[in-house]
Image (cartoon, rainbow, N blue to C red; front, side, top):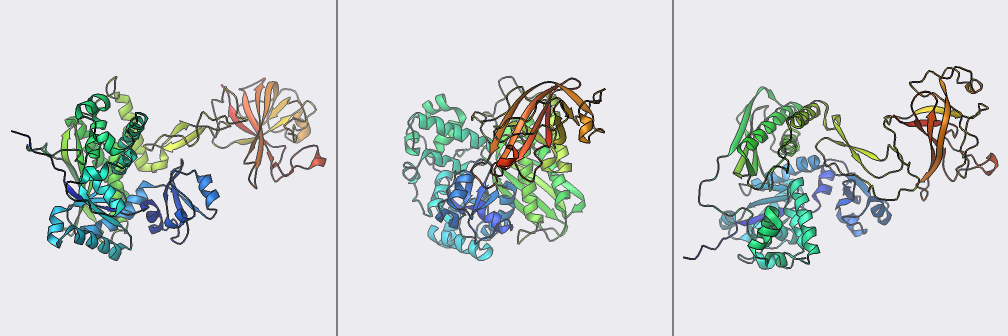
Amino acid sequence: MAALEETATRLAGLWVPDWAVAAAVAEGVAAAHLPVAVHDGRGIVAVSARARREGVRRGMRRRSAQGVCPELVLVAADEGRDIRAFEPLVQAVETVVAGVEIARPGIVLLPARGPSRYVGSEESLAELLVGRVAEETGAECQVGIADGVLAAVLAARDNQIVPRGAAAAFLAPRDLRDLQYVVTTREARAQTDALTDLLRRLGLRTLGAFAALAHRDVVARFGAAGVNAHRLAQGRDVRPPVVRRPEQDVIVRTELDPPAMRIDAAAFAARRLAEQLHERMLRRGVVCARLRVEARTETGQELIRTWRIDSALTATELTDRVRWQLEGWIGGRSGAGPSAPLVRLELAAEEVSPANVAQDGLWGQARRGEVQASRAALRIQGLLGAGGVLVPVAQGGRDPRDRVRLVAWGDEAVPLRPTGAPWPGRIPPPLPATVPADPFSVQVLDDAGQVVRMGERGQLTGHPAWVVGVPGTRGARSGGGAQGTGAAAAPSVRVEAWAGPWPVTERWWSDQPRRRAYLQVVLAEGPGVLVAVDTGSASAVDPGSGGVADSEADPASWWLEGIYD
């Protein structure tokens, strides 16, 4: 007997264009009448309608975008802000249809078959959703209806209804990169980008070309991530319907005593609960397709929200989802927030399935010390905030301070500037082992006790013989040259050898260029040091002053930038 043909779930997708910009406007970060763009440090990720009319596009560099639109307002990306501001819109959708799922901020998925029958047709359902959201939140949205998740999301972006059974034909001419619109986690986003890049290099550029591949070939060549993408490209669900009882949901709950009405108190309890849920799922070896967050107040009111998950969440991502959801409820951004303090919090991992595709690394699981260190960092973040624990990331730059970026624990550890760029004037290796958080002032003197200055062409006015003010040194036993400078109280150390200078001119094309020079100095006593001098604006050089820059910064002031071992 032939197998029953698999049918995808009929879904309605609701999409708010440029939601990251709308969230920034809703929280007062940017004005609605100005051209606004949201950037993540690497490029533009969202653009308002007015900025788009000026020529600003997603993927642009910030400088390119500002060149196209000088009055552009740049706003840093904030996923927490996007989720918090999205809560009122989701509650407006819930007044029309129950069982709403958030795919990501700006996109909502909901069942279409039952609601469309109730209101008369799918067209009536789409009109009702658009009108209700505009009436209650003032946001403009688009609704699309189709079979399967990917088709529903893309139909919403096109503001159209795809007939039943036509999802595959609707998706066929689409670019393969449209798969990114349905990913919800960082891990899934990275896998999808890598898969898309590989397929395009193999000559497969459309969803239809990828869907035409045989299933066995996709399994053998592209693994689990390729199989999921293949099902989406064919207009099917990632997880096909099953006729057996699924695994039991993983549920954790806690009673809040005393009741919590403040965000910090509720977020602290949510963090512990999220870690407990993540640990239970790891012990059972399962992943979930939905995360349900439920809170109950003293008056019996229940607040429930469901999130759609397309891959295994890390403990940090799970905690952030729950914390942001609570901020959306308690922070007053929702029209149906808690009427009384919260007394109970519950997290449920729904549609649980074995994590047979989420295997350990090649050398096994993380060691116990790594897990304990990660948990300790999370606890410190809970006490001090997201900026309380920072992780260094190597990136491109000229001086040691610019070549390291500090990111919050749990955020994407990606550099903002490429390390492979030439970077003219950068400090040659070896780099200092210690870089002070704030450079402090020192003086570089010649044998006559005169301050060494930097000329217009990058030459020194004298040979460095003494460095005054280096910490951890006792100073020279003889008077040296420091006494004539008024710095007798500071220790002066003899210079045994030095290298440089390395002049650097930054932002030479702007109205405020900056000129600096660096010296590597080996001291007779104490460690080697890296010192720098700021010679001021490149356009503010007085020809009659011997080439010394005339600016607000003292050209004779040197700073200690690093200490060598």
